[in-house]
Length: 249
Image (cartoon, rainbow, N blue to C red; front, side, top):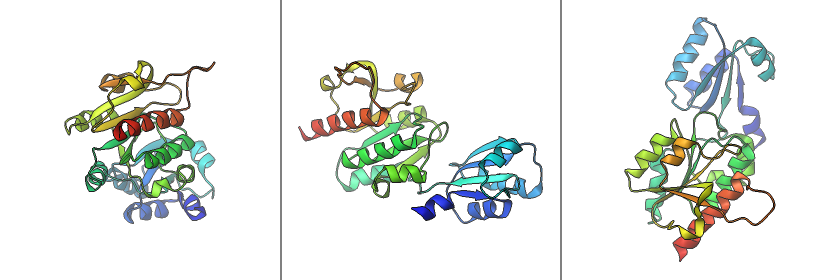
């Protein structure tokens, strides 16, 4: 794990360019804004070929802040600690097990510990994979890997540009979607069998409006305490295992 943590931050023009050309998955690329140098433009061209890479143009102060060596030369890249899967890999996993697809979709989860815990839950609940968005969300960092307690090695995680569009495409493949929201129907009163996608929202704002509107069901978790919400990864666990209960039932 230490090697993965150290290898995630890549600094300097040659090192970043080689990382792209060697096939490493680059989560984020930070580039000095306004820089027109040839080598930097070459790096940007490489970045365009990799749909998973999010490019940020930032001021020198931001690069200096991120840098560990002080020799970033106007470019810093963050490599994923683990490789991303494709959605087809998730469906293939379900087919091999002769099971209806069960996918967990995350709408802008930002805390790496939450993402790691959700990947762990997905594995234990028998979900065939996890889908995360490219923007405004945490990727497969070393912290996520550690929090997953090894589950990241067994549960495919796919990264998509648009969650709403992905849900629409998966609906065309026969999937139903349920999202977690306090204003929904009690989860015990919903039919969560069959090909199902479980959508979990952002830690603070919950499931976004457009994503919620594209879900077939909205599930609420009955709560009897003095506070009104669960941690995102805990909510995911409760709903995932209600899906497990119904599948076993």
